[in-house]
Image (cartoon, rainbow over all chains, first blue to last red; front, side, top):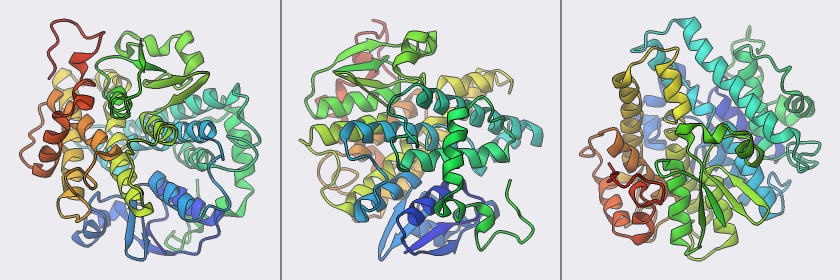
Length: 218
Length: 218
């Protein structure tokens, strides 16, 4: 199995964590979006969306991080990353989409380029945009978790699910953009557990083969 | 079953189409995001994300349009809105997320308000933002469909799936923001089929009970 992406992409991080949690070996194929690799004709042949991650399994290509998680969950059911019940699955998917969809779509380089381009934002303005959406995403996630009896040791129950993977990816960008985590004790508590797990740790940007040697993470 | 939303929300439109395709009766609960209804404490008790749609099924609340589609698909499998095979499901989910996640997260009123607020965009600037992301979303979807042998009468095979529902929702915002559909013949062809189906037609903004009588659609 091959995972197309690059060390800094937090969308790719989600796929890495899922592969690691399921114990699936994979090779990295480096596609550095910041250098324009994702727009190259070769990559667009593989993924016409021109985005990372893409997962290649034999002659099958799967795009979009949450679709990759669903694919891995169906093909390699153990350990499960979705709850066993309909209502639990719906909750986990709702939490996941609120993060991976609603927040991360506002952060990629194509959006930042637009802000610095025709919207004339300087670097501080672009950072503020990212910071504020991540902060809002954290608050929304905290509000969704804090009083819900379905929240357990992890976002849903006692083992990690898609929602924890999304939560952990949100923490990565929260650190990048300097968001205060104090107002989000439940999110912090859960990330504390994730952080201690090799599957999450091995997926960090600084632990990827294409990370510059002097990059220590955020 | 109750669907929380309002006539103009294209995220709610996706849930309406899925309910209609599966022949599930539901009641509308009007939550007008533009008037701030989604931020009210009462609605936040139901959906801490403060967004629409939310689906209420007995005492279960499901948030996020694609999570609602997955929930309906699991609970009411007929007619299926996902392919029967693993690879097909992955493709449909990848297409759906590229639209419902990557494009629609850039368009809601909270994003438009931010553009007109601290980014000082006038109405034309906000429209240009929305127009350009929808156009890019259309081009990405066209590129993903046009040469793929898995594309059939609909986005995937011979019956509508999540991907067609997402495609149709993209057409709604393409009309709203005046995007040229000429560069997207495959998308247009498929929407032509959807448009003729009562499940899609009944879900249009202008056919909702809370649409102003003089609103004829875009």
